[in-house]
Picture 1 (tube, rainbow over the protein chains, first blue to last red):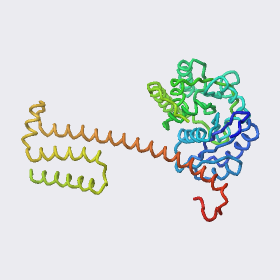
Picture 2 (cartoon, one colour):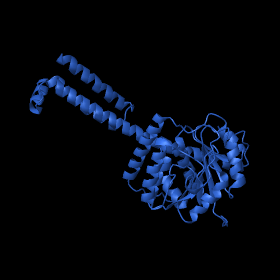
Picture 3 (cartoon, each protein chain N blue to C red):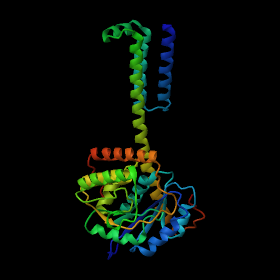
Picture 4 (cartoon, rainbow over the protein chains, first blue to last red):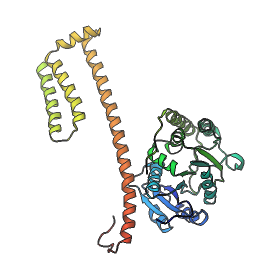
Amino acid sequence: MTPRPRAKTLVIMPAWNEAESVASTVREVLAYAPPCDVLVVDDGSTDGTARIAAEAGARVIRLPFNMGVGGAMRTGFKYALLHGYDQAIQVDADGQHDPREIKRVLEGLSEADIVIGSRFEDRAEYEVKGPRKWAMVVLGGVLSKISGTRLTDVTSGFRAANRRAIRQYVAHYPAEYLGDTIDSLVVAVRSGCKVAQVPVNMRPRQGGTPSHHPLKAAVYLVRSGLALVFALTRKKSSPVGD
Amino acid sequence: MTVLAVLFVVAVLLFVIEMLRRQKIREKYAVLWIVIGLASLLLAAFPDLLIWAARLAGVQVPSNLLFAIAVILLMGVSLHLSREVSASEDEIRALAEEVAILRADLRDVQEQLPIDPQSHPMP
């Protein structure tokens, strides 16, 4: 293989029935992000997500059944590892993650193994209230402590990984609830990956709204707490080799 | 009554062994049922054993001892099954991931080869 002047980058986009937004998101990534390949992981969609994404210029992997964001992302990281990508970044298909911010998040990899694009901090244009907010504060506090750096938006899916973190994710990326955000991050940190966060603008989702029903918020609080406790009691995992 | 109980247990045992012979059940699961079956056979043939065991354990009504053992055993069996199902599910997921990646790679390779895609259609 000829030497490359720049890092080979893969944008991983998990998509489950996102036919409405996936094409515009893929096109935006190709237009505004640094040179990269876009991999749409079609998580068992029943609409035209895979075809539309391919037409928009993405590489498409179709999972035979719905496996959740965790399963889709692990597939993406496996693909990145098998095809020799130096770095990978998760971008949601619903357009919430602004493709113009991809460059900024990727640049963070010069100083860390995992970079989280966070929506709070200085550039807050986004508001959450109630139990959801408390959960984020607690999760952020605990993860900041174990990672030794200030993290405020640990459930953000807008995150980049270098080769070391990709190998770590392939070894441990649970399919459980919040496994793709909390659990994978906690185990990665405990296994020696360095985490950093970069403030970014988030856009409103193109479809659907986050739930503010008190009961659902309470369930979220309990489940995220459990996910955190389980993650904290897990053993270290050793990243897989090339 | 004893005869009926013995007949029932023997029927269950034969059924498990037949499933094992036809490879409808894996040995690791069958062993558990065979052990439970043999113990039940012993109890059915010699009901006094239960009374003796109940006195030994300090249980006043012997049948309660039987119920307690049955509940604990069945709980153990279902926990074991939950664990096995979870392990199987993980394996299935890992395979699905591999298959999805391989299928995408295969499509790339096919597009590069000078073969007529019509004669080797991708599903």
